[in-house]
Length: 99
Image (cartoon, rainbow, N blue to C red; front, side, top):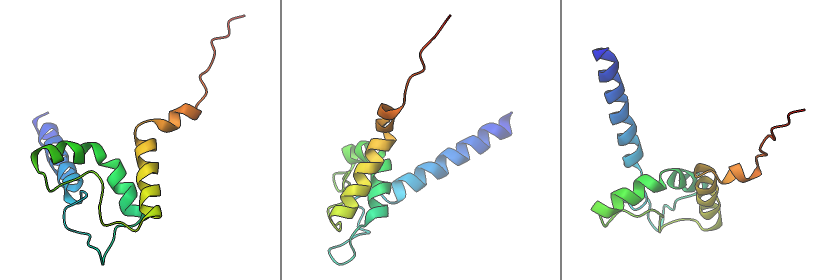
């Protein structure tokens, strides 16, 4: 049981390091090397983590300033919508039919 807790803690630490490793505004992108579609998707998925981190570090944002425009915005928007349950709007609820 103790080994499972250690492994779980280790996995949580690795996950947090991965999430905090490439947040918007971390200096990885510049005016020459802009963020693209896949960066937009990633930044949309980790937006809640970026928002919390930006409270403690004012250099971190939830949106990359140096992006390539429409494709970054499209990826960001798709990830925000799908990540927060926006696709659930298209699901149909099953009706309870008792005969």
